[in-house]
Image 1: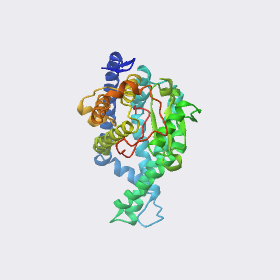
Image 2: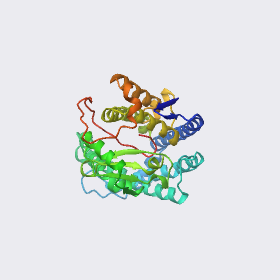
Image 3: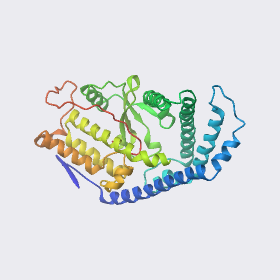
Image 4: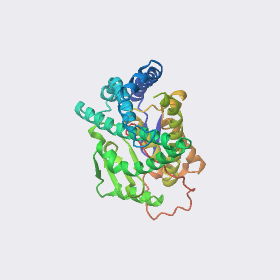
Length: 357
C-alpha cells in the first residue's frame, strides 16, 4: 500500500509488516498463556481446598470495625492471591515486555528501568485493587441488597477522579513530562484545540524515548488537568478478563473510530491523517490488517487498514478529493470559520504507549 500526497509518497513497509505480524503473534500467544494461568488459578483456589486453607490461615485477623466486615482478613487473603499470581506470571511479562520488545527494536529501556517500572506498577495496582475489593466487601456487609449499585456509582466517581489525576499523579511515576517549547507546532495544536472547542492546559512532551521507540499522542486529563501530550518518539519521527476483554476492546474501538471521525471533521486533512497512520504503523510495528478474530479479541483500536479506509470514506463523503493534494501546504488558522464542517462528535481520546493514535 502506498499513499501519495503532493510530492510526498509514504508506503507501508513490507519488511516491517512481516516483523509486526511475528511480534503480534508472539505477544498474543503469551497473552493467551497468561489468561490460561489465571483461569487455572481461579479453579485451583475454588475447587482444590486451597481457598478454604487460606481462609482458615487469615481467620485470626477477625477485627470488625462494622458487623460483617473483616478488612484485615479480606486484605491479607487477596494480597496473597495477587502476589502469587504476579510471581507466577512475571517471567511471561519479562519475556513479553522486555525481551521481545528489545528483540524487535521497540524498547530502549534498561533492565533496571524495567524492574523499577514493574515494582511501581505492582504497588500501584495492589493499592487500587485492594481499595476496590475492600469497598465491595464493605458494601456487602452494610448494603447487602443494593451493594452492586453503590459499587458501580463509587467506581464511576473514582474513574472520573482518576482520569483527572492520572496526568499529574500517575503517569509521571513512569514517564517524564515537560512543556513543549513555544513554536509553530505548539501554536498549531492549541489553535486546533480551540477550533474543536476543547480547552487544554498546554502541550506537553512525554519522554517515551527512554523506554521505547514507539510513537504516540493523546489528549489526557479532565478539567484543569486536560492537556495535549506528544510522545517524544513521535516528535523524533483473570476468568473475568477472558469475558470482558473483547467487550472492552470493542467499546474502545468504537470510541477510537469516533475519535478518528472527530479528528477528520476538525481538520479536514485526510492525507495528513493517512500519512500519520502509515508512519506510525511502520514505526510501531503495528499489523496493518490482522485477522477479524484477532482484532475482535485483542485490539483496542481499529486496524490501520480500517483507519485508512475510514479516511478515504470521509473524503468521499464530504467531496474532499479535489483539495487533498493541497492540504499539506495549507497552514492551520485559529480564526478559520467552521461553517462548512459537520457537527463534531465528543472526543474520548486516550491512549496507551503501546498503540498508535
